[in-house]
Length: 572
Image 1: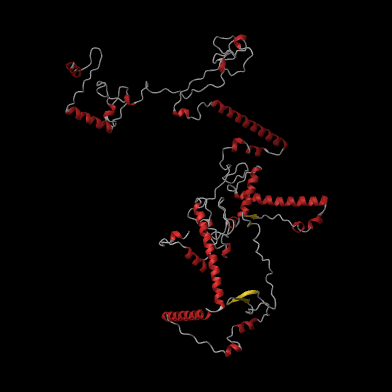
Image 2: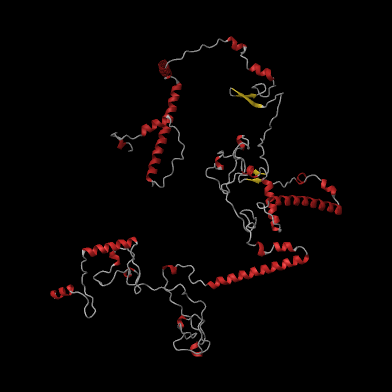
């Protein structure tokens, strides 16, 4: 057996039956190896054509040999190929194509007579009686042979891959979109027809001439000129508003950082707007500061005029006039001026005609409506805190007391002068309230160095020399010694008196009360310590006071010392 196996391994070529032998490849000579390497280098450089596999496809020369070559123990006669690296058709799973989907609303033809094995209730072949979804008949189709229901359509069993299961347009019918396109085309055709009839009616009535009709034709200016396209933020339409964010350059100082006073101008973080001047309370001139609020920048110069002109351009464009603020500013300005003149003339004529027909010109000289009804139509804008933002000036805060009331010939009010902790009148420097004003004379008298007669008789006090720390300490010790001597003498003298007895009695009573309070406190602590710590009451809300001498003495008397040998017998 060993010799035969050795012969089979060492055998060369293919047998007569077509069985491939397991022969190892012959070793290449040094010259063949060198030529092979040179050919590989030339292929990598692109100077030589790439190697072709058995299917006629080029093999990338940069692919390593152990990937492109077929192992010798499988088939040494095969050329290098990448077929074994590609997905194999016999192994690869087959999925449904992109065009396959379930059919909706398909009904099969109904049978004319009952078939064997069909549903006994309705006569369909696709289910049994227990799975039938129709109403149970009094006499089933099996016995009547009439009104046999059509068979349900058997749907395809789709096997979708990963992307097919998650495709949101899977099974979409393009004809549905075609129906929508056709519907919009019909609506557009109806609009064009209606517009054509309207233009014909206006032309017949003489409201529109041929020149304007040619200019308004859709073939000429629908998509021909870019000037007709509205600029962002200029076409004011309530149905579609174009919002432009109010962004600032990052290098600029933020509005809310210009004045950190919380009582200054209000900053709205949502719209990034600060309408008032943030430097209004600082006394700075608005013309000198770099930023004086959005209202100052918005309503300065010709801003209001330009806004009115832009509004007129929108209204004129809606009425058929071809004007544009950026394209034809001169034409728009002239048209706006003529419009204002005609408008004023029309108002005057209308007013005169009404007064001439109905009269009542004397009623136009009536007092203003604000005086009659105590109401105005002035626009006032408030902030969320009630402060006036626009429309009226801030009202000055008034006191409930009378202000600027001058009495007794004073030119200043009481409290306008202050000196040495006292209030007075600034006009005469008088510190006496309700006094009569003495004017400049009173100021001169109050600032003289004259003193009263009684004070002049007294000798001026001698100034004491400053003492050192050592001398001050000695004086303090001497005073304490004198106090101790006096207290000892008083104790010896008053020991026999009735006052000392009363004091002793009071002290004893206080000490007795302190001992009772200490006993109650100890018992209270013992009861609290027996309660669970989660259910103990709070003691932080009690009033804390400094203990008295009697309470300290009671605490010392009741305190239990650990080193006391008689401590266990105290409670007995």
